[in-house]
Amino acid sequence: MSCFGTRSSKKKVVEEKLQARQSQEDRRDGMEGGEIGAKQQFKYQLSRIMRPDDTNFVGNVHGGAILKMIEEAGCIVSTQHCNIQNGDRCLAALVRVEKAEFLSPMFVGEVAHVTSEITFTSKHSLEVQVKVMAENILTGAKRLANKAALWYVPCSLQNVNKIMEVPPIKYVSEEQMEEGRKRYEAQKMERLETKARLEEVVLPPTNPEKYTVGFSQSSLIHLVGPSDCTQHSYVPGGETMKLMDDVAGIVATRHCQTNVVTASVGPINFHRKISKGYVVTVTGRLTFVSNKSMEIEVLVDADTVVGTEEKYRAVSAFFTFISLDKDNKPLPVPPLKIEGEQEQRRCEEGKARYMQNKAKRMAEKERQQ
Image (cartoon, rainbow, N blue to C red; front, side):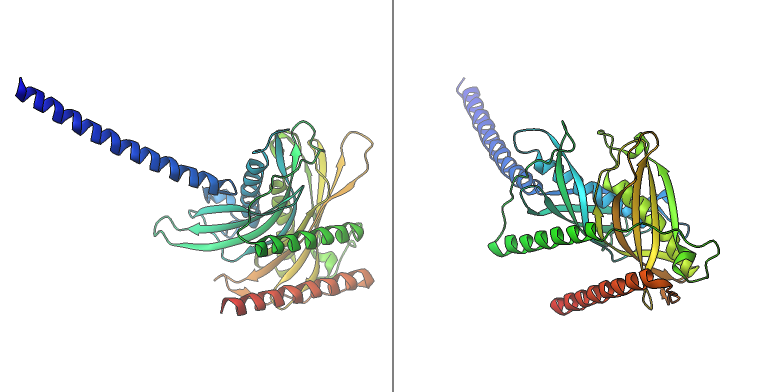
């Protein structure tokens, strides 16, 4: 009996030790899970393999497909964050793309890892920074493909025209918060200036001369259906940006007669929502050409098929494209022939944006060195 009693007591001690160890691991896992959850409150990642239907006719992943993924990741993290508070449930709507940079081309078979992070909140809006890493799943090699900065506002699910308040985030330092506030004020001012200078699209002449604005100007007309919309029957920003990139690509290809790719996008301003059943007209026109890049203004107008509502400007943006040879190396871009005062004014404004962006890139390189 004493022998069995000893074995029984030893077994009990072992079980207690195992239970104690398991409870410690459970507590540790719970703490780690809590830390991860806290981090993911302001971050989100989605991944997707690039398929043949994501590419252009020469095999590069379409800029519009990447913009759509970037917007989806930003929308998800913004919506998650805005619904941590009590009150109406809401869905984040894209109102501005500050800048989207295409740093490296992506190809079929690679995996895009899209990470979005909330970096600033105002009372009614959120700034989201997005990075896209391209992974070669055969070698495991990764590289930074895209960076973007976007602004969202939360719209009530009960009334999409009602803008909800945004829960504040915690900042690492006062400087980080102040830098975010400066970016917020700058984009707010620019949005107001953009609204003030919106102009109508002028149709090109019947037989335009080659390398003129009218020669490459292009339009796409699209009827918005259920598959283009959110569950609340309006078009998400990613769908619109994909159409805009399509049109900008056509403009660039017509001007260069070569393979072209998106180099950067921004700013894109979303002025009004586009609803199901509306017809959108997406028009692209060249504004400025440097030695190796083209700035293309893209305008989106919307009107109803049935009803009396007048056509309105829904989105306006600038896309930058470059021309590539068969080895994906940059080619010189044919000069743009300017005709008339309006084209001259847009060209000068485009050149000013080009010089400003060039100065920013040079300053960024110096900081990195």
